[in-house]
Image 1 (cartoon, rainbow, N blue to C red):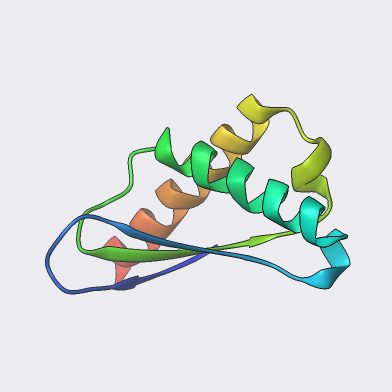
Image 2: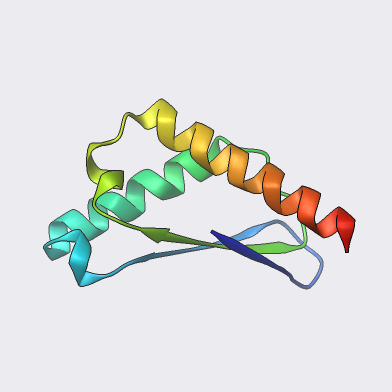
Length: 83
């Protein structure tokens, strides 16, 4: 997961799933799961986030995905404060 500053506005989210994730159906499912999990996290406004899916996204429990994204956002926020 990565983030960058953006123009003023709500948080923006990009989700990428390569062919290693599986078929087109599997890639789309992985992206939908990540988008929904991210929507349940507190994303900072004026920030662009990029999520990269792997095969584990397809089988992981949904609560685990939400927790993972939330902890990544917290880590990125902490790193930004140190700069």
